[in-house]
Length: 324
Image (cartoon, rainbow, N blue to C red):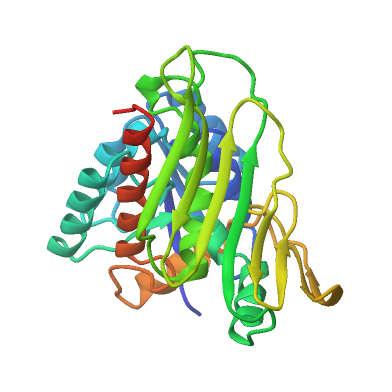
């Protein structure tokens, strides 16, 4: 019998619960250890998900020889230093999106992954969801003809707490890094490449972070993408792929759904509606485990260059609206 894959978790905050619940899928590994600088938080999280070990600092977790891979769920601004320490310790990394807060940092982590021959993957879980595997089948079958336009929204009216990571520039807050990364990544997923031109307008809020971004992307070959991400208004959060014959619509909360449909002309010809097997995070977790067991340095589904391409684009768009 194969030994279960043993995960170490750094940063037992909100998103970490989603990861831990995903491990309840029978084909996923197990939560082996939890690390937090707040020891009580580590103790409570480990107890909730039956992890046998907890640590009050990251170094002790990195020194644990029984850990097969580490999931990083800290705020964005800590991703780079934490992932760097993991790679230098030879521990495979699955790090929450965005992998870092700049292309320069991403390039350095990719270099470290190669130098230490250690796996590195951005946890852009949406790309691994079953609904998008179905959407890919529809696209490959050319049901909607030639793809021309991808439109998406990601918007909520958030609580106005200036100390929360979403609005706090010291915690790498801002809507593009937190929400817009999904819009960008899924447009990249559709076209399989980055845009030739990108234009953004936006709203910089009182705390100095971007609270709204409206973006136009030109991929060449008469192919485009448009999206709005924002903290100030609840939008209809669909993703729609328009083609020369019809369109594919991924339903509300396109980054977190199991529902989509395909329309040709005026007629719906197919649909997909499937609940997650666990929390939804299990699909990216299984992919990371598969890659690590095979000795890969990156996932072919979310390769390093795709992550870097998106990060470079986010650097460019933030600069356009006056962010550094």
